[in-house]
Length: 453
Ligand SMILES: Cc1cc2nc3c(=O)[nH]c(=O)nc-3n(C[C@H](O)[C@H](O)[C@H](O)COP(=O)(O)O)c2cc1C
Image 1 (cartoon, rainbow, N blue to C red):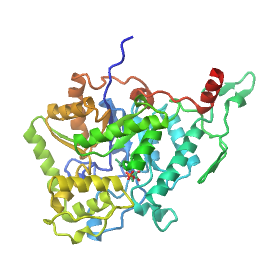
Image 2 (image 1 turned 30 degrees about the horizontal axis):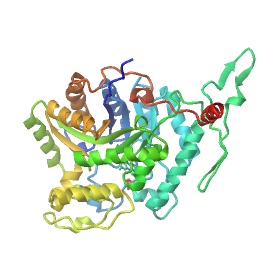
Image 3 (image 1 turned 30 degrees about the vertical axis):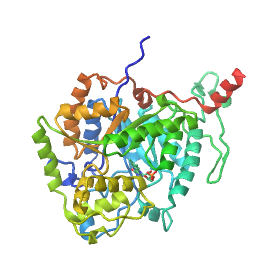
């Protein structure tokens, strides 16, 4: 049989009103944020019409109280739906689209999280994915009975044990454990149930999970963290690596680095998809695309532009800096360290003033920016995809629904014409559409290894 052609994978990464900080001010935008279910249905169904692999929701669990009240009162990104709740509802109005929810290892318990994702997997017929984060936003800690954020290193240490427990719980049942035989009266086969009995530094979890086995083996594991430790965690655990890169060379370096780390964790490239964030601004002509970009940029208010930069790089009190002055040196943050480094490098490389950095950040927020015609945008995607910088992209619509509609109607047909993207879904599960192998239940892996000895 001829080997299958490598295809691009596309996620729709959607924020409340869109990725751009002024999205809510666009005349056509969904601007209620976290209020109208119908808006979310429209977004999900658009992504599914485009045959995109999944809808992806970022998350944090705090309203930002840093910065001036004036700046805060102008922000559209303040309230939203809790991801698991909204995605469970969206599963009922879609058939093939996957659902990736961000959920943190820093404030959750692994049993609860394993249960939630396993349930979303049942509700959706195997379309759930977990974006494992250790929490960007230092203020989240204040809502979880702590007075400060755990350190970067401690967060990752906890995350690794957390994920081991979650994956162990997802292996609680063999696929055929539930016989539900009314005649014999046997509901499940107790020999096909596995008790975890985890006792570690952070967690003590007996198991098994009280949710049935996943239709896709396990929910897909997504990871976003790009420091050295973050990359190791990606290589150890992630099936999708979500990453923020601004230029091709960086993307290529990141891709090669993650792939080079895999063998250390006994993994190979076919088990992982690297998907950078991608912020397209597309229109039939290049000048119309530029106009679209400029329109949204013109809606950025000064206090908001500064406040979003502070949030993206985890540094406060930047509103005292002169707008036309240089970007100063800054100490490493305990929050989004990799994002901070990328943006400060970008400022140095492109010789940006402080306000120019605010503006550059306010739309793509540290991800690839591509402005142009469908051909130009598809060219850029093809370059990253074919020249080993990406296996696909997390597409970040500037405002919703317009920018997602533009992408689905203008760019996806061009990618399909080039044979780079599917015309129909291959499967009903997220794992199936991503072409990822079904993980072997650890209890079977043990038995298989035993049989081979
Ligand atoms: C592209 C990207 C997206 C992220 N999305 C989230 C998110 O939605 N919520 C969150 O709490 N943390 C998010 N994080 C934060 C990471 O989980 C991590 O805590 C942080 O980036 C620090 O780790 P690093 O220095 O390894 O990147 C994201 C990180 C990256 C790089």
